[in-house]
Length: 239
Image 1 (spheres, rainbow, N blue to C red):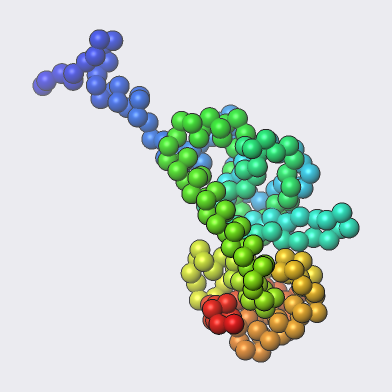
Image 2 (tube, one colour; image 1 turned 135 degrees about the vertical axis):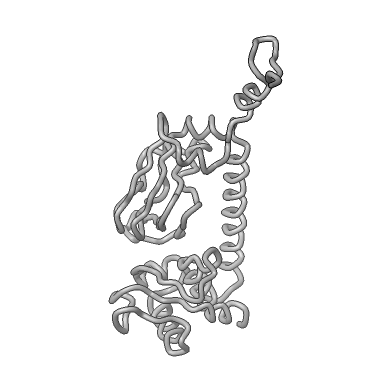
């Protein structure tokens, strides 16, 4: 048998390639265990990060759903976004953000990877595929932020509510005929949409009467989850 080609240090070419071209894919990074990594399972409604905590880590959702929310000085809570598997949060620490601006709570049983700031910075320098994945996330978040601004400026409260319900149900990601959203108060919806609770109540009753949404466990979303049908898209497309 022919021996493997060797370099000046006596190592085979194959071994050198293995050493210089490791599997630097994002999946292996999130599955790795060691310094700067920790993977935890959170129960529904369990806090992962609290508003005002030190911003010293980036979080990656391996499984489940996480809700980000903020509380005003007057104690009012508003949902910012609900994130599913494959999404990040806490990325503000990479831009020298000293404190977390929002709280993160598990909506369902969720597995979340905590990556310390320095570990994440190093990984982004060394792992091209992770960098590509992370940049894709940031760009999609930026696009959504711009869409939210346009929505707030030009669309009616009814259309903003319909869009919010679809986003909270992760409709765009999952593509299911119907998705279930755990309890979210009409006060929280009103704060996010930018209107009054009375208007939200009116539109919710209208959507329910038209068969666009259903309440699990009764006539009120407090009785269970909120089932959203894809036909709610018609409210957004047709004013």
